[in-house]
Length: 235
Image (cartoon, rainbow, N blue to C red; front, top):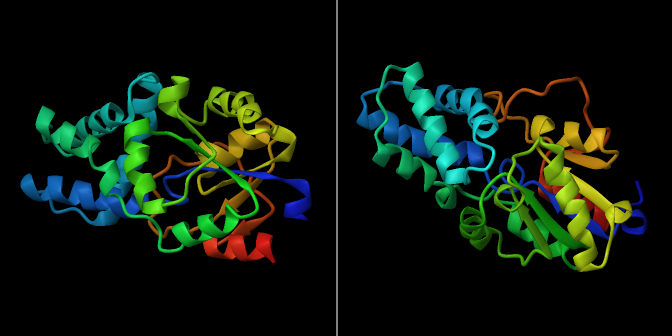
């Protein structure tokens, strides 16, 4: 893959790729579990989130992400026999900005910005992403969120909206490479649309916070970190 010659734009998923959402989810759910005297490991808490977030997104596609997180928590509470208060739901929904960036994300993005236009395609709302972007530092050329589209990935509408907006930054989908961690949310729909993608395979031992992929598709090119990806494409 001769990245510099083939592509002038990189689109990124944010959570799981640039932001360590599993650590953030575990931190937020750990606080909630402690208050309710639940003895659960971080892996169990992250798995509970993974069981329910996609259903909450599908049932409420136009809801802002903090509301989706609140509904996800209510469903987690049902699993463990705990009533989730409105305050619990609001606190979980507001936790996104506290989720840490992966240590390599900001530097890798800064290096990549010297050669490529950078795009975010994320399953959150604008306000939540703005808080996360403070940790990433870089200024993205285009930001497309679930709030902008009215649906959540893997809905193809999110990708198609991004394609339509690429003209506003002087490029088009033929020059676009998608970079993401989630097979379910990103790589499977990208493959359906013929969008080339690179897998940042951070190999979460817990199974991850994303829903399981529907099929067996995996991108041919993968890297363990954003730093390794940046090293490869920048030579």
